[in-house]
Length: 474
Image (cartoon, rainbow, N blue to C red):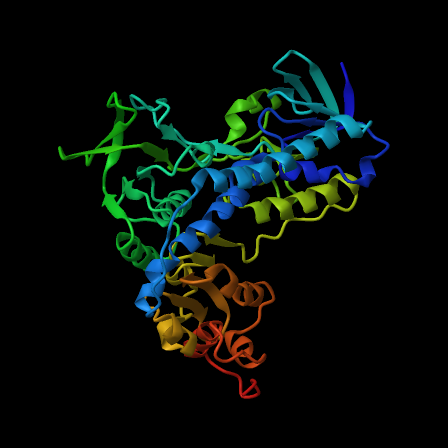
């Protein structure tokens, strides 16, 4: 039975744990899927490599509003796909080869694995492994409902849809979250006829209610929305196409014939594939591994020394930048067991690279008002892109910056942006929350370039009705 100083399950952010500290120690790296994990292979990176050209394809429609007539001649989907995965696949293979063939101290097990104890594992092929320290970074996978026809070849998830031959003429996107929103925008930008179907009446339900509502209005101007319908079956039409069958639970049926169906109804942590019960690990209600502030896995509520978890299998964020931060903390704690450091989840931001783009950090207005201490007044400001000079230049009628703060302290509680470059505009607001910078100090301390688009953030900060100290910057 091979014994290792460290066993890592998952080659995404878990792969970064193999630092020079381990050069003279034995490491097992275990990956049953594609080397490199979700982000590089089927998530953040390839999707954004589709988002950018899809945005370029949509430019003629926007330019026409501004008096510039442009023409979209052709979308070479397969060329775009091959350019993206020609790069992605090479990165994945290079990483695999480096770990498998070039490092004498690392053994790569390219198969799935299950726990037989908190520090013991058995691979699919029957190899038993033990390790002094263990890190579980096994990620998540797309959810597929148990309905007839769900395994037809025209039904895809985000793991497979980017490799199709296309673009398809018609696409049905099932779901109302960020994956659904991004792919609906990608296919719409490339000229596909898109219908997005969601079982609830609200898209992007984890966002601020006003942002969700405004996004739905904007999306409905771009592609077709059908809200309040659940998928019941996918039927083969016999001509290479399928019909997606939905109902609203009250007798109304919706039938959509289409080239492909994209199931974008969320992702689940891979904890159920690891037999974590055999290891005695605690699970949360969402099936993530329960961890303490040092990211040690809990067993009966107590942390297991030297047994860690990170990424989608251990947190609800499902964000690469969170997994990377967790990996840095775990790397430190593995190497310094006498000086463990905690993870800090202050001001975790996210972005949805759809059209229009969305970014947020902190509390929604609803959360801030419901969670405020008695007597603490919550103030909100909403600033339209179109209220600034750069917004005039774009003739923007959709973009907004919405800020939520405490009136007496000027503490920023939440920031929500819908519109062009939202993922970049939000960064100073993330920093203000992380560094506890009051909103007036952020608005009036630094200079803000006029007439850059960032002026909409400055104006939103100034619009917040907070108490301002007498010695605050002018």
